[in-house]
Length: 314
Image (cartoon, rainbow, N blue to C red; front, side):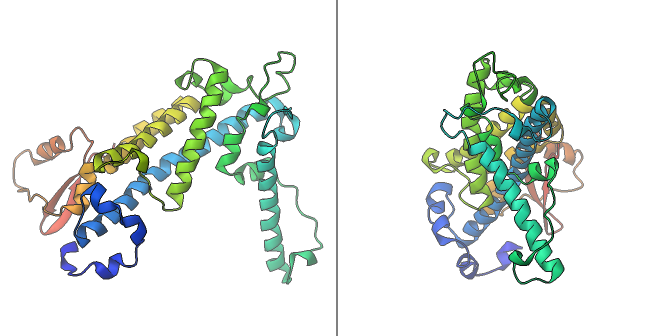
């Protein structure tokens, strides 16, 4: 049990003290045990967001690629027109080139190891032609943000067949109206939303603070700022692929993230005085289900001197 450890100071000393500095005042955790419990909860909260962020990235990438590939072929990024008068007109294609360079670098590293060479310059074999799927898989999230830039869009009816947008929007984004009823505005708004999620994703993956500090005055507002990101991810996934959104809902992925990113879940890690139910009580499971608040919360308890939880999976 966590209480068996008498001194958490050596444990806390190996964590990021700078990141924990603001925690006591915001989240009302003060003892060393509570602080360590908080650090475990925040890691668990971050972990609950990973599947949603990864699903968003995959669905976005593959939906845009499928729509573009259908119209322009395998190397559609080399076929579509770009408005070179627009700012950042080369950002998307540069992301593709970065993916190709990354693949080449990895191939060279493998060749050096395979042939027992000391430097990539000694390679004499011809590099492979990387497939469409290889290149797409090597792209980063920012690629699929930059694909919505103005340079890939035209309002000129005579040129619309040469540009990716707006003609590909209905296929790439199945429910565009979730963002805006006007396609052009929806694309522009989506670009900003994706930047917001990309920035948050980077913070998440680099173990940075996952609550939004400027919106935070206490633990409730801190956790609400995390839940706002869950809502935003759900909104974007719905706009891209309603069927994927329904699947994630059916599997309880949004519900799971919201359950973990809650004040009730945090208290499980900071207040260890759990209830001790009588397992012989008639209708105990029904009582525990009621305590989940409709499946929104985890119910901690002690059973045979073991800490257990009861929650709705989906």
